Length: 110
Image (cartoon, rainbow, N blue to C red):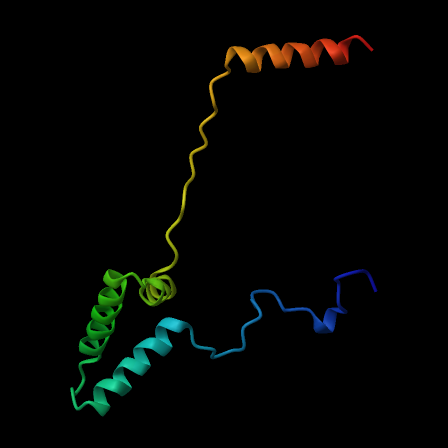
């Protein structure tokens, strides 16, 4: 048996990403929890009121300096923000140019 290749009967079938059928994602679980809390607080069918309160709490914590809760909830519900990085190349100074020439001369002499 080759490395990292289990027998065919133990491999995932086409179209199966490895999740058990019927597994709920975080957004579904979050919405169901909001409905349950709304029912427990006798808000009726207003899970949005619970979600709004959770977001308010997260924003208050973020304003104090603890944004981990708010960031985690937003990342899980709406996906992570794509980050882009710019790399700036330093200008070649006279010293750097002289050092580069010296190294080139050292290696070219052999």
